[in-house]
Image (cartoon, rainbow, N blue to C red; front, top):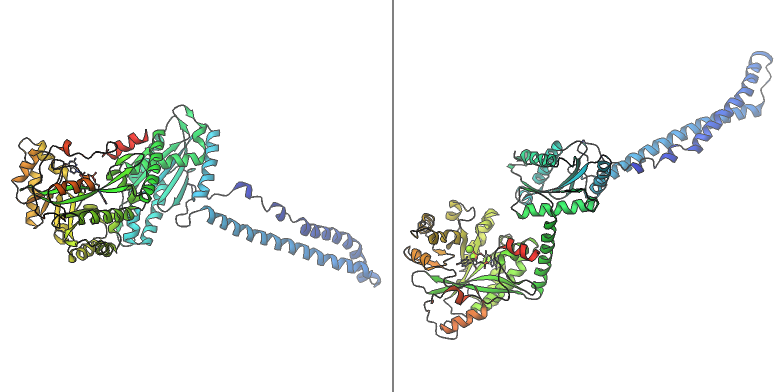
Length: 573
Ligand code: C2E
Ligand code: MG
Ligand code: MG
């Protein structure tokens, strides 16, 4: 639908019924019959009148018959002509409805993806004639899936209709608005190329109009959106290479993806550099799929120690990708992509199987911590599948610690609770990872049966930055853990100053580069063999020697890049 409420009708199809409408045969019969009627009537009627009034002689039978036949023909021809017109009108109506159904989104009444392409091209041509530019704007609702999942589909539908209504209200009359599918909308509008800020103004007004909550079935919800814009003009004016509707859509899509990546709820105009990034992202996706098939994902292990005594107590498994083209890749780069493309369960299963096999060789008192993605926690059978895998690998559940992040708690909290409970009943322990960086409430901390809190390294690093080696936040989290009877692990112990500060704080577990960087399984086995901590050797647990991190660094085929933006930037070059 156009923003002024008109529907889209293909102009060339309007005259399809022209010849039929002018049904010459039926009309011809009627006209010929009328002419004959006039002719025959002219001859017969005077005879009839004369016979009736003067001489009583019957008129010529043949002429009278022709005259009567004429009348019948006139009636027949005229009725046939009327019938045909009605038939054509009915068919026209049905075809218009069918065309509207195929061109409009039935829920919101907006154009659909197919008709949007045609509408944009038409808009583009007419704008071109008036020396105007075209902006194609892609709008994607953020986290709409959650509304659908948590409030039900009819709530989701209601929100989508209201959303379309609010967008329509902000657009110029001749703009074309489409729902491209699911929660993805787009609009195209002409603008003065000297004043591109007019388009920004409209987009800003859209954000303002979304600030009011949306009424769903039972509750009201808040909605944000990510927007990408593309134009057929660049800084030099009209650029035919940017111009066609498909190209505009593609560019706006790329800009929208950028808005999502930068944290959602924002808008970006397309820039050519974004395309490289997207190309790289596609290569990354393909690489991850290939890597899974070729077993390129491997577990690395980071030591976890008792902060007070320096005793090694276990390892955290951290995934690494040995990519043939990119080198050793950080999980911060590939885990989010694997989550998005639906590979995370397969990846995690593969790594877990290898980690259970590796850890079975270690001393039985050493624990194994494994990170679990929120996406995996959405599977209601997750706990059962994990327990089955433990049985298959013959790995004792008491040695396993599952780390979940606070983002898991936003989703179905009762499901998370029952999952945690099933796992704990079998002896698996559950830690809340990166505590303090997300949104877990004190209520969740109290009501969910966690076994441990892991303080995020961003808090621990304060112990090193502060002159007095003190951090009120760390103090507060440690006392919170003590109050809730939750043991604590401190991440990111990078130097002696941090270690010393933590040593005064009671019983804590710790991990960090001071103890060593994450290492591959072979290196861990070697280390444990040296310390007599492999299963077939003496089970005595020994203290970890603190060595400078360079000595302990993992030789990587290529330098590891832990900042995904840096990674993407460099790889995209
Ligand atoms: P995390 O679970 O909080 O893991 C700790 C991260 O901090 C690791 O980064 C580790 O290498 C790093 N780290 C440890 N000590 C220090 C230190 O002293 N200083 C600094 N600057 N960093 C330190 P990594 O290996 O890049 O992992 C990043 C995140 O990726 C992990 O954070 C975890 O959330 C996720 N992750 C890793 N492996 C997996 C996996 O198999 N599955 C899932 N779902 N997530 C994983
Ligand atoms: Mg972790
Ligand atoms: Mg962590």
